[in-house]
Length: 121
Image 1 (cartoon, rainbow, N blue to C red):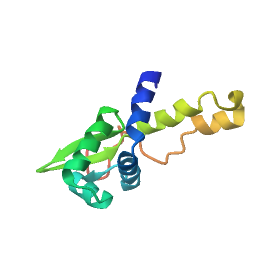
Image 2: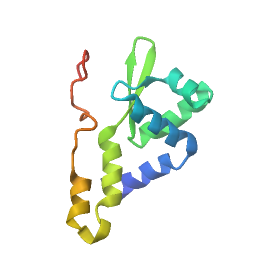
Image 3: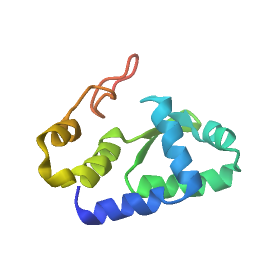
Image 4: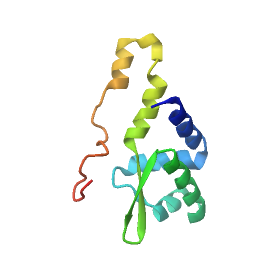
């Protein structure tokens, strides 16, 4: 991740509702949530959540897909991982134990190209 992309990501996350949306979508998993469910969960109006979703999507932190008349939003795990790695890449003077944690892929979340059960990616 380059510095420009990192700044866009941090700017998008530097707002309470948007940070809450990202955390909610991370917990929702790869199938994500419908926009209306996100608004309900966050306790904000649909128009308000729509504004925040656009900002998060512009920063590349979430993705959307249409199913019939609904739009589902999902966390972009690759981008979120990139933000964490960007923060940690120079950590602790390159201490090998900490660098190993940053570079570790523990399989917590499937890569964006993985096939979701019952759905083709």
